[in-house]
Image: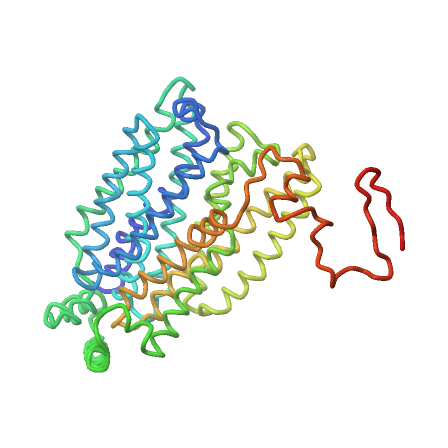
Length: 466
């Protein structure tokens, strides 16, 4: 069957990535629903909405880490199916929600499912791919994330045309998650397990059969035999010198280095700020003076640009230029685009300067295009490629769970909770006391300017140079 079969297999498995994109993007449209906000008595900038997004990311972090256990024990395919099943339950809870508790639990389950699929789909694709086009095959994961965002936006756009009195505005977009989840859950029964996983479980005949099914083109018997022998010998060698479990990732220097590469590429991807735009772009456009149906329309255009750029990149560029150069390009390009965005917004705080607003939208669009030509596909490809077989399941789980999903919640939230002081409804002088005393009254003596010392009197606040 060869290359076409492998492509179709990878594309179908990427339905899990579609769910990643859809579930991540659907709340952008849901919080734009007046009926949703009225039903739950909230606003689109409230802490409740922040909690809904945070619980999704928290569930994803748990799911990604849990995937390291199921992938090595039960297989790559089973882990993706588990994610689809959990997503199914979460979707039903969200769509049928009568209170915020149901929404929150549903979002946690959806996040858990997305976490599972975000780390397992690229591994499954990488282990089935031919080296010549592995970038394209794994890049389909990012492609389908983008397609998921597109579908969520346009379903949301269409649903918002329902009357504000109708719950269809938000229940239907949440219920639609059931469709791809069910397709993925059932369809994977008809697809094979990864040949590398089968060989690793000493199912040699089945592994060889799947390898031929994936890569045989009628004239490459020698290559198939060499590939099989290399996979088997590598697995045997790794197994002979290492031990099972999670700690081996940190004990073996080479494994530790490769794990760090996988974690960092996910961290750097998050640091581009792409998810902030994805989650809150409707609010960003409102601040630029773009409201109503035009806001959702601009969001829809944004969500289309990324997948188009990504498709061109993985088809024609990624497997030719490598992984490092696109990521270097992305780091520079996104930085410049965000600087320009900030500069324009600083001169257009009320959103009334139309030219500046158009420029702001332009640079937001630039970010998604540059991201799709760099960290978007490269993060999944590189992470899946650098992990050796012995730690591939757990390593990808750790890199995705820690590097991708917990960067925000495990860094930002604890710092805010433990160290940030509440300043609501306090005068600026009272805030001075919250931090340990009056601003001038507690300065250390060694930083006093002895040549120009300032003395403050209590009653008249007179300043006298000594």
